Length: 381
Ligand SMILES: *Cc1c(COP(=O)(O)O)cnc(C)c1O
Image 1 (cartoon, helix red, strand yellow):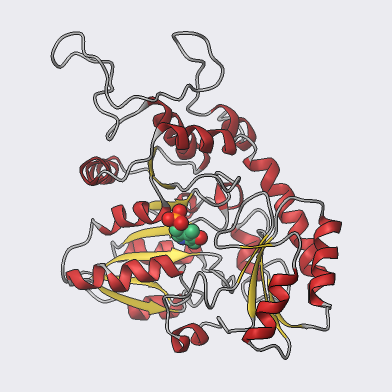
Image 2 (image 1 turned 180 degrees about the vertical axis):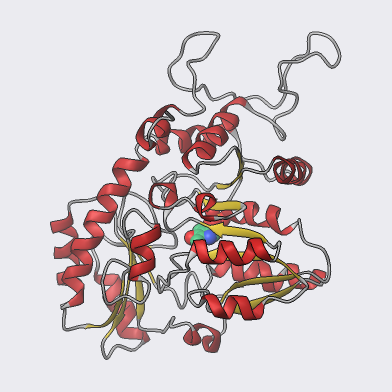
């Protein structure tokens, strides 16, 4: 029997240090490794390609995503970039119209210049995906739940489409974390993470990850990883490993707190719309119930009768929710999506996917839920 999630979060990929018995994986702060004889080494040659601290993290993450192989990167965007290197001019990528702003930016402002075409569809609509596939489609890139309106994509249904058309299928699992959702089990070929968010969870590291099962795909991605070189150092790898040890505990509290916050906001007179997959009225609720273990801790709100200025004023009244880019840390954060995470989209593109000027995205932390609700109460007035 494989160990359960919490046990793997603490032990997978991690053995006591053979040299000293140290329980914690040491920070192997070294760029290179002494060889006994030219070409005779212990599996480590140069730290761009391999480092023992980083390897422990990669093995742990692979285990948590029910995958065979893990690769970690200096950021989530570096992980995304590595996947996009699989593409050739003329290829088409099918992706969501409600994407993380940085993904949208690398697609449209970097890879589009290399002759790769990106089609943006509503990925909560499986038929829209099926219809948008052409003979040139070689990659499907899905985010679920999406940022910031938390739309759900049916991972298994998309997996079946991708498989029947032999299209590579990638899922950005950042918002759910491996604790809530495991896309490889639902047909994905690659799971991508911004480990900066829930996986590390302490807002002190920027880190990305890919997990997969196919050995040939792993070898190809590992080739780009070593060749292009956006690999993280051992300090950050150590911190992320340390963060992961409490991933299950943090996620449980994140989700509990989010429910309390969402329930308070849902009936608040200053709220026009609230997005949270845990509500039965949320469009993707049934899919979320089926493919996630809980509903996550990102809650987005649209303020009633508030212009940009009033929205900013409310955001600046929070005492606990910090105005910040990012999410998934132990501390609560509030993000103004239109000017922050989605700042690289035009106003028109943003509004088409519901990112209006009077929207705020909350990343509910693991402080006491009563204090968080009180903070929202005072800020909303
Ligand atoms: C933050 C984020 C990324 C980018 O990751 P970085 O670690 O910031 O480079 C990608 N996708 C999603 C959904 C994110 O939230």
